[in-house]
Figure (cartoon, one colour):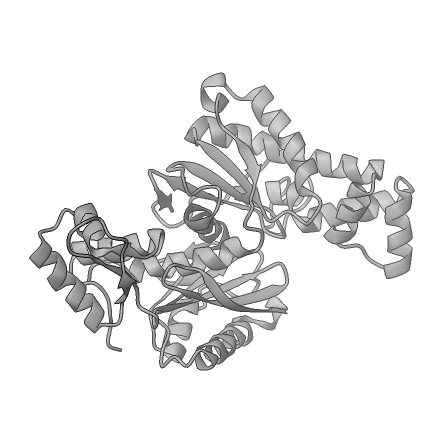
Length: 394
């Protein structure tokens, strides 16, 4: 497979500037990179020959000879894949990581990695064909699982039974003939927030991802922090209590066993059967089962038992955040992945615990906010993930 990409660090910095800030004039870019004009022109020529950069018309006049705008090439297209909470999301993004088109469909991960990854490849192939592309520039993949990033495979993933060490990266790369990177979804969503969300102005923040699987992405010093073996941020299986509910990982009392969607649904069904919630009992009788969306509707509709259940989970989450905030000292905490309607209730309770129990130095000016990217964080982050590799010097 012939690789395209920058040949040196200056070309890599140029591509990342255009990715993060959009079209800019040659003069601005040359000044930002601190390069002599001739050297800059040679780098632009090489990148233009590869289709990575193109001219986008004249720049605004600054007096003297008018400079031209440069932008990332129109054939630069990244594929993004996000698997989680019963859905498969696939998208195409341009070089600036703007989502151009996306497809979403229900998926059962228990069908196994061959079937699910095969479906992702099919969808990416269709999007590529519809866009008239010979190949994608690269593909980023987010999985609700611990991922060995260097191997491109999930490791003992509780939320993906049967996926242990399946070569997700190599399978997709072989089918589509382009670079592929795979990472844990919380890490990827943190990258999405860094590129296009509330985290953009911050070099140090935590992204807490709720849903079926609970995780945390750490952006430290402006870069994603993965730890020695890509295991950083796996907060979902920190033990809160020894005698708590059984978790999918086999242990008891984990954060996920209290705060994950399955845990919320379990508690909602218990409240319905015990007669503590009329709204949940009526829904359970009607549907035979409850979902986290049912709980959200009951809670936002004013049902006291449903609200109490959500607040209890939020307090547990707050306990975990107290430790994380004291240890990492982030400038910001972003919470994403909560079911529609649950966010404000979760946020209020979590904030209360963290601000009450953390040291003034750690939380004095630290906001705790809900993500404003909704379900786009993972797709934008997946594109960002693979762009980091493609826009790195060969």
